[in-house]
Image (tube, rainbow, N blue to C red; front, side):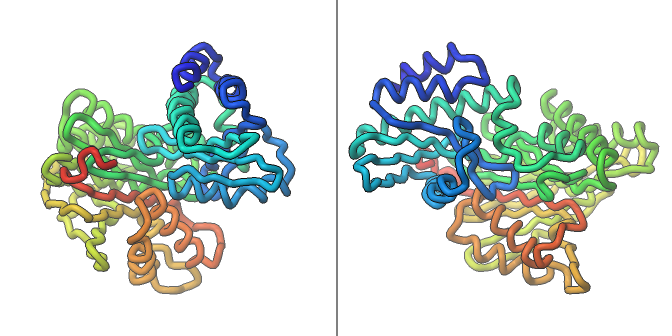
Length: 389
C-alpha cells in the first residue's frame, strides 16, 4: 500500500494530497473514514483538513486521543462501541511534528495494518512538507486567527519547528505565535555539523521583522557559501550596519555542534541566554559577550568552545522569556524558568519548548506577552544514539 500511496501523492495536485491518500487507504483497507489533523501555530490543538466543519462535539471527543498520539509520537488505537476501530498515527517528517492521520476501520486493527497506516503517514507527511510552499490550504488549517504581517514573515522564514538526527533532537517555538515581531531561530544540518542561530530581535512589528529577515538571510548567505560562524556573524553585522548605520542592531547567538564529537563552537553577539540541563541541574553557560550584530562597521568576532555529554539538554531563550517581569514580579529567568526546565526532564525537546512557554504564560497570569519570546531546545544523544532515533 505505501507504494500505491506514493504514486497517488506524486500524481495529485499539492492542495489535494489528503484526498489522494484518502482514496487509496479507503480502497485498500476498506476504511470507513480518514482525516488529517494538523497542529496549529501554538501547538495547542489539532485541526481537521478533510472535514474543517467538524462539529465541536465530534472534535472534542477525538481531541484527547489525537493529542496523545501527537505527543507520544506513537500509534494509538481507539476501539468503538460499533465495532469500528480508529487508528491514529503521527504525521512527522524529518522529526518535525505536523499532526496526526486518522484511519477508521470497520473492524479491529492488527499489527500489520497499523504498520501499513504508519507507512502511509510517513509518505503523506513528507508530501505535505513539500507542498506547503505550493498551496495555502494546510496553512489555513493550522491558523486559528489571523497572523500579523510581521508574524507572517517570521513563520515563512523559519526552517521548521523541530528536526531529528541520530545524535540529537532539536525544537523551537515562537510567541506570541500570531503576532511575533523580531525574535527568531534558524538551523541547518549538513554532514557532521548542526548550525543553530537564535536572534533576540529589537523593535516591534514590521520594522523588527524586516531587520530579522535581513539578518537571517545574511547569515544563510555566508553559511551556504561555506563560511563558518565568524564569517556568518561578520557578514550579517556588516550588512546590518551598512543598511542602518548603527541605528539598529541584533543580539544573536550562533552555534555549531559537531555531531560526531559533541564539540560546540559559539559566537556570542550580545546573545540570548544559553542554559544547560544536566540531570536535575540547570546551569547558565557563560560566554564572553561580544557586540550585537550591526552596531559598528567591520566588527570582528571570536569563537568560544565547550563540550556536550550524552543526555545533556541545551535551552536558548530570548530576553522576552528570561527577563519577563509581569506585575512587578522578579524576572521569570531568576528562578521560575529553571523550575519549568527541570520539570521537562521526562519530555522530549519537542514537548519541552511548549512546557517552558506555557509556564511563561502562567507566570504572566495568562496576560499577553509584553515582548516576543523564543525558546529553542537541543537534546544531545551523541554518537551512541546512532541508529536508535
